[in-house]
View 1 (cartoon, helix red, strand yellow):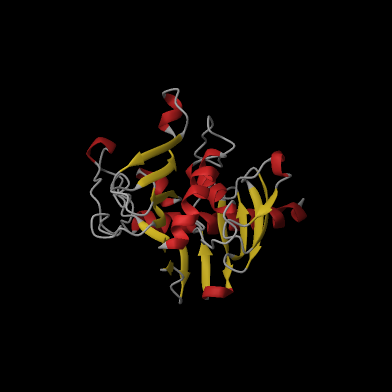
View 2: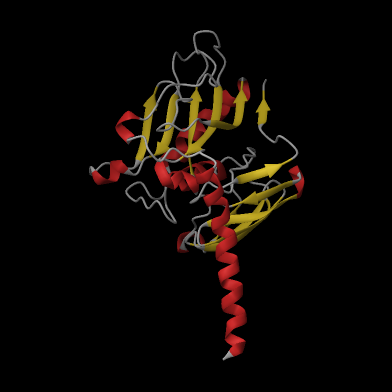
Length: 260
């Protein structure tokens, strides 16, 4: 019997390490556990260029901590596009509550894409401007329309908002967006693609069993292991660690900005 204790102790140690990051996020105060959702801040933070002053086409990818305690584990991601000379942005994302109202989970709204997500400040993961963005935008819309789970939503392990963002990015092989390890659901793959696909960054490959267990090997994500939806790994490209809850800790800023 004593031989059984070794794998049990190892499992307990792994679970402890996986939960250490989310616990740190909670105690650091980064996640607001007290504000009701109806009172949460949705002000914009000034990342998105003003369309009135920037006629060029723009493509952006954003993320922000999810609401309440879930923010200790995960971010919510979305995509924004603005065609050339457009007067507003279109924001593309999957929102879970739409399912409960009998609506498709995919949401396409106009307005500022850089608003706080229920009190959480957004970050920009990628931006492309100019003629390259203009040529890309119709393919972004087409990729969003091809999302295979328009009527489904599961916060864990997916499909969810991050599954949607990853799906769109995989349809744009020339785009390299490194979604953070806290984008739970980005790794959701099922039998329709034989549990194998390109990494969301399009710089490698991943295997995943319904987003519960899997791995990525790529230039951008590096080596990332997914266990119960929590990701951890090593990113040599940016000299970074990829940790559950905390996200990506590195020495190189890998936010991609391309202007034409």
